[in-house]
Image (cartoon, rainbow, N blue to C red; front, side, top):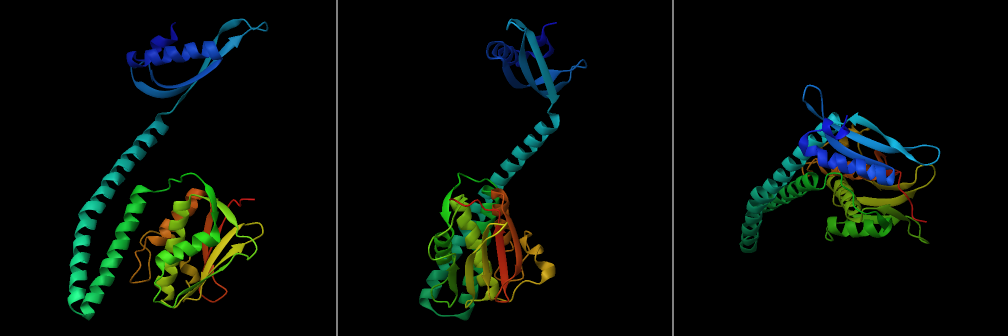
Length: 294
């Protein structure tokens, strides 16, 4: 029985090529649809190995196959979800961001002409809308895809993220307590790591206030990592796991997505993150499982 004939016509050339490869190199693997006795096409992964006698002479081939229908189904579902997310991201970017830009532009013109408490409220609301749009776009486009891992200084990355998030006019302060002699380097996707820090800092300002004090420091011992803690109101013990859920927020200015993004970035790197009480009575986020660069 010719093994190639067990496959549908459109798969036979590829299967014949895999057999030839196994005869030449000793082994080959191929994914192809196998035709059952009932004529049904079922996706399989096949591995072929060359058989030889004790003198090295070719005897034949032995092949094994496994049904990959479930994996193929999941891959199709993931591809469909990816396409839906890409469409969602395009809709958010165009249908929400464009009119928001118009609102912000007209608002700036009004603020230049007059001072009004209602305009300040509108500005706060539009700023929050912009953050929601940015977070939604990140969740739709980035997901958990991590790029190349590079050495990143925790201190330097934290200070850069803080400058982007904090307002110089406010009294909020950041202190880095990672050691004066050497700045610890960790392996991370630099863009994703920056996004993680920005969202953690926004969370501290949203909940701790414009005069919050934030400290970044190292964690030593069995669990290597770093922490970010503040002197804000803290998080009740019963809510410390909920804060990472999408949509959860106790702040009027929060989007309910920031800490979920933080959790996704940490998970994608293989890190652990938890919320607990800080030494200052506020909130402390601990990120552990990082790989240090020697």
